[in-house]
Image (cartoon, rainbow, N blue to C red):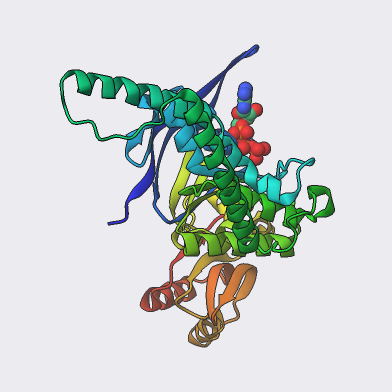
Length: 382
Ligand SMILES: Nc1ncnc2c1ncn2[C@@H]1O[C@H](COP(=O)(O)OP(=O)(O)OP(=O)(O)O)[C@@H](O)[C@H]1O
């Protein structure tokens, strides 16, 4: 069984504003499996960003629990929360790069933060060890731990180690810039890059601390379709190569469709439906699901008379043979009113709305035909 890396149970978030309380999230339940690409989709204001900010505890939930690798965030001490956050990289629509730093130093930045405070940590450890040794000596226990003799010795040792750490940081940043396809651009500055390249730097920076989870909040919303495709391909590669669990927040169904394994649809602060992308795409159950997946175009299909059926293509069948067989079986023309299908390896995925004549016999023949071939369908009404 796949392990859940994040488990959200009954999560709620209420903002207390000047004009009263506002419920941004209500009773959210979601299990995110390790190594998966989880999509979270919804219209503007649905609560997507609030959810992602609750997942890494930038926003404290008002109710419910979030578990990261089985541990409730509400029971974590501040130090553990910081460590958990280092384990969750984040990228944003506006990239948030540091304009005064070159690319190498941008990627090094989270590692510098992780390494900062080394001297005070080393001194604290030294004091604790010294106390422990003193107690052992008093009890005549064997003391085999070697300690620097003075605090100055500790500081010198840490500074020397610091140089090695800096070298490591630079090596890691170069490695990551190579991974995201920006090898040789280490000395460039963000202002010299395109949007797609900036997002690549942001991804490299988010991966610097080797997080297990990468949160992407509308990461492709500011990019053109081709660049979006390239960034999504990079995220997929990172997921496959490094095993990083990725959570993608978006309002674009095409993003979900192209890379996500699972999707949760948020509507008015609640999860309307969730499950494997293929399933949800094949037959969205809720109004919001239908609207997001089928787009506004389907509405145009509801002019005119006749009975209409939505056929779902789930990648098992090609739609051309099905339609021609259907026409042959019925001996009557079939109007395609709306189609949102894609060919994947010669197979059709998506939906189609067809119109049939108002004739009970024909309708029965069609429904029989669909059932025999195991094609999901439903009658749709305007
Ligand atoms: N700090 C806050 N105080 C008060 N209300 C807030 C706060 N943050 C978010 N909200 C409200 O919560 C709701 C959900 O916001 P959120 O940013 O999570 O939506 P979203 O789905 O990410 O939308 P978008 O796609 O437009 O970014 C919105 O109505 C927003 O105004």
